[in-house]
Amino acid sequence: MEKEIVAISLDQKEQMELEVILTDQDGKAALQFLKDIIRKKIKDAQAGPICGPSR
Image (cartoon, rainbow, N blue to C red; front, top):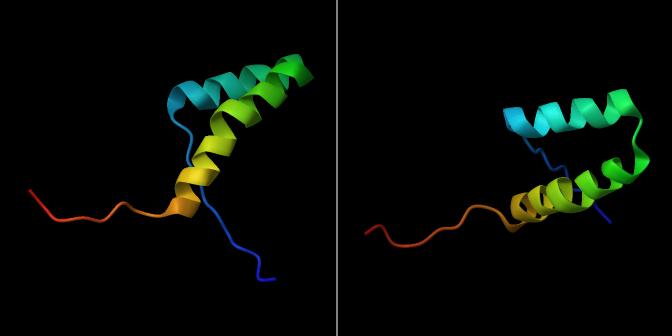
């Protein structure tokens, strides 16, 4: 099975939220961040760009 590389970006708010989680060592918040933010970004990246006719 070939490994797929996925790159994601975090906006400023997400970066600040992640920094707070790391500083506080908040495991519960870290898991929630992974579920709410990172999982969605990975799924969106794997789906690829949405192509369609220009209007």
